[in-house]
Image (cartoon, rainbow, N blue to C red; front, side, top):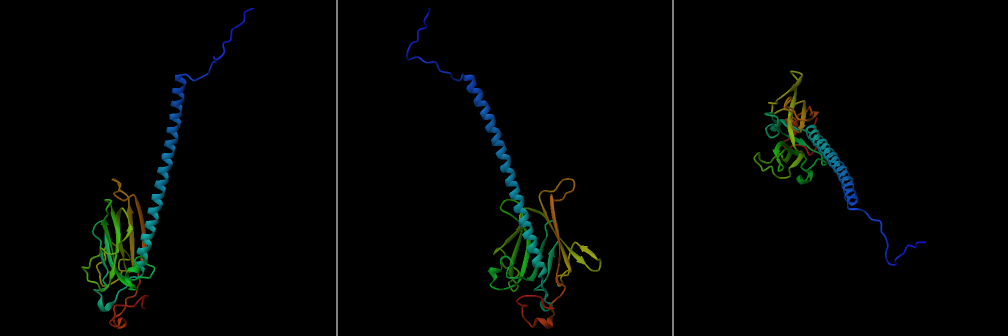
Length: 237
């Protein structure tokens, strides 16, 4: 009978071969890359959704501010030049200047110490990021025309590619592309804001938002003005 000699102090260990380690590492790398790719897609989608929501919110606030201002437009016959309604409708990026009696809740009212009657200038201007922003400037009605408008600018919309104005013409019973009567208020204004690049085929912005705003149909007569710059608020009928 053969007896197998067992030597003390020697043990056998089960381990991984080099090939098994390399395969496991490769599989782990594939799983990690897949997880990273999924995380990246989720992060990009979340960022895009937040950006779209932010732009939509800013667009809504921009149109709300314009609607509020145009709905409070004011004109005094005793000094129609001082309260002129001026629209520059040349090109795709247009501009507008008018006087309005604004509520205290209107953006920027805190800079004017209760002066609710102000001139508003809406202009498209280049931004520091390289795009075009729609900017609102406010100033006192009695301020000189060449006053510096850099104070308290309010960016209404960013990266616009179109700002179009149309004015209701009572005689033609339709919207007209220009308004030449600076001493009168149009019955209504149609605002169109465009965002994004234009397609080569249609040559139009990727996104268009349009609003129609009805302006006050009353003008303060010279007999009611009484030599003052205007009422502190509200419309005189």
